[in-house]
Image: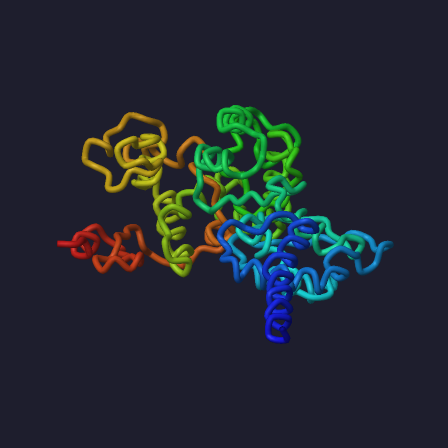
Length: 364
């Protein structure tokens, strides 16, 4: 009888452990993630029930909100540690246990969140499942033309269509002296990371980019452009060419000097990026920047084709970054009129003063 009693006791304990604990956890926290084994369900159920008070009670009901950022691709353990380090939760391991039990560890969304100690761990975990935080980060890379910026909008979280952005960017933008009477904002949508409200309109987005350009257009840049005999608009146009030509930042001032030297003697710029801009989207290559260009491409009839037209193209061809803008304001002091890509694929160029030297630098 004693053995039977012991056996029944063990069965009771096992029943509580393997049936009762998961059932209580499911009642308190919902069903466990489908991918967990039964032993894992028991393990995490026990942990959650043990830490119930820490999971469901806020640290400080009267606390104010603060911004907490989840980076794109950030692992759960890093998020949990960061939450603990910023005193938003008391224990990062409990946060991880809850996420794993519920399966929410696979669906945390990157973005900026308004969190506080007035929220429980459960509240915070569920808040981070919101795919639509109030702010989004919108990135513009140096060298992007308007269409490329527009094409990044569908995955940005902003409620702005590609077509809407292109129409707005190609319309006059009042209030910015550097645009003059330009009909497009091409070249002045400053490359940067923009943290903006998700509900921003297309006009608000473009205004933020133009204001950012104005902020970076300091007196040193303006004076540098003037020393080269260029207006701001002309300098940005030249910088947009330098942006596409200089794969290595160290070469940007040298490439700028080549184009400035050509302009000073009335020599055509012969800049491939201006032809690429004129050609537009290449459906076969699925790019806005056709490379390599063919002999026929270089004969493409357009005022942007600097192999055929004198001087600068009518407008910038992309959004130049700070390195290219500074290169035009403070170019290297050279006698170079030519450059060609090195044959080693490094992205660097060989520079030449004469056409004969240029021919010698060309790849076999």
